[in-house]
Length: 406
Ligand SMILES: *Cc1c(COP(=O)(O)O)cnc(C)c1O
Image (cartoon, rainbow, N blue to C red):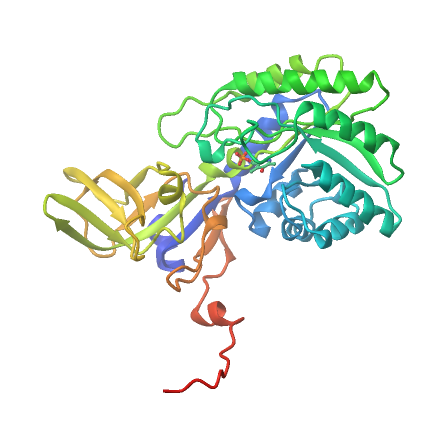
């Protein structure tokens, strides 16, 4: 990202998320290009970075949205995503969410259990509509990623088995209020190996063929998200190889390939900026205490995820340091054993590849306001979310008079 970081910090203060919109566009184009000549839909996984400006930016290029709550569906609609490009997934949808999704007439409601199917059928009947559905199949393949972000094994809570899916399709086909036109799988996140995706694709494509044989016509073949990115020195999946493997697996099927990339689209397009407060040593251990914390970027604490961290315009001999925030938890760190030069108050650190699952996973823990977000496009910077102040944080709270006094 070619931006003047010091200037941005002066203008917007820290901690701060900065997103390179030009790079997000390049990622989108690259993926679309890999599937050129095929019917495809890139349904951006909104949960990875759900800022309206980010969704709008992708919608402008023709992207759809993969949503996991009605809130995300509303975000997508508000940001201008066409309703016929919106998918509603998620393992536990409430009646009200299903109702709203049906009323908004989005492309697909993605079902994750037999019980949910019955619920959607009932609600569609009440509203007098037909629900377009897809079913999330759990192909039981090992995605070879972190267990917390692995979703495609039977031991995970997601989706249904091939046999259950088949029963559900047969039921849905007969229902007046269900229209089964899609199939879906999503085996995990930060995938760096193609073979599990290929394997899952093959298993699910076989199911589609067997459904075809009984006149159940699947039109949307949704391969989920999960494309890995480079945080450190990972070797990731090339989009051409990805497209090739998928096209091979679904050979002969007349379907639209739906993808749900989140991380791939935004992770490397974002940085998190934080300022140094103090340096300190506990024995031999060096700590750099910064103004950003686990409530702003939780991936290091939650998954032990690695983010490259660099000091801005600071040279000199480096020594390893833990970069930690002000939150009252030992697990509050942004990086461990990071090679950094000697630092002073107000020096700026850049935490790289923070565009996905950064801001969206942030919280107000320790009554810290959520940070501001800035977009960079064509050399210009735009504030796309204001920094929260104290009043923003307490706005919904009421002090009640319980009659207790000392
Ligand atoms: C989280 C999620 C995605 C996006 O995953 P990435 O690893 O960010 O690409 C896509 N589809 C579903 C159903 C998800 O839950």
